Length: 126
Image 1 (cartoon, rainbow, N blue to C red):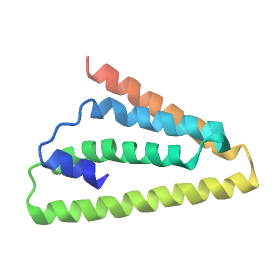
Image 2 (image 1 turned 90 degrees about the horizontal axis):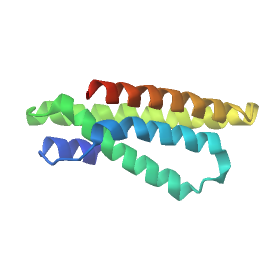
Image 3 (image 1 turned 90 degrees about the vertical axis):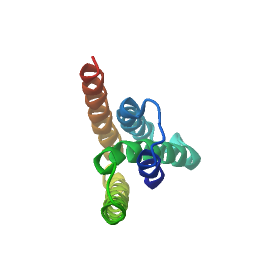
């Protein structure tokens, strides 16, 4: 994610970043629905790709900033995103032990959010 922010701030172009962000949420939701059959390497690949694109779009809000606010933004963004991701992972894993359908339902919610955001992105671009 930090690399994506750095790309944006450096003025590098990452094509189709805006629609890929909701697609990555949709893909993560589908992977949760599928459950255990997905190798960890695939999860890592999705997280890395999603992080790059999400970070790139987050870079919009800090573009052309001075060094100190930029560094503070990146540190805060990395801290919040890390805590959120780890928290969701632990919550999902904990719920999985209590109720095996919980990750699938979480995946369905991710799919719904990703789909709604993608539709909004597509409508907004026309």
